[in-house]
Length: 333
Image (cartoon, rainbow, N blue to C red; front, side):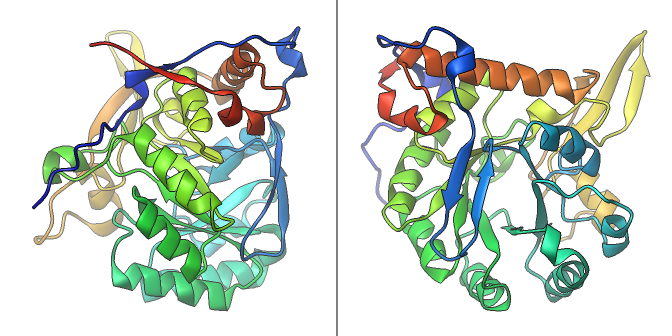
């Protein structure tokens, strides 16, 4: 056992210090980025905000609206091949998979039919530190040498580098920061999210890789802080929940409307997709009701507006310049 004496920070521990700016309007800020990758030969241009691969946010309905704003959507991994066949909208859509043989075979079927429209694959597990996961990433890179491969989740620089060297282009960063995740409470495992972003971004960028900040953003200011900390992409779950296009049951109580929002390791999700919680594990996700929020378009506009405003406060005319223009100020508690 040892204790790391260095201070580690979450989003609510800091603020972004304003700086002199030549920008006269938020309209002058360019939020789009063009990415090249360590392994995939593809280039990709988007506004790098992503809907999370939870079944309450990673839906085709969310994707249709997000795509109009050039945002991405990581579809949840429980969509079947026939679900993709029903759709004709694949702009900025990411296929998500687990690591079982059944998962591998399902991705193969999806790619065989729709691969020309789907350049990204996200391999998603709760614990990205296992040898089996590393081996699966190598297998996926061999099977899909031209695809943009996302892998996660991890929170430290060493495993970020391992996964990039194994074949991943983008690493998903975050263990336990999400509002519907109870991993930290159930296991005691985690890492303050802003510090995880800073450290993993540094490790990834040194190898020509990228990272996604996954979890912990509860308002648009947190999204700005994630990008300011060095994230290339920011993934949102709870912020995209509760809308018309979100998954989750609509509930009315005392004249007010709510939608269910839950973690993918929650009792709710495991009963829905696996028939219950396996005897050898515990639930690591919460189920909650979030106020019904109407169309997701309004939330997208709010997030992007806040992000543009943050850029103007520090004089960043492009989103990719935000981290270079950022000085974080620690808040006193």
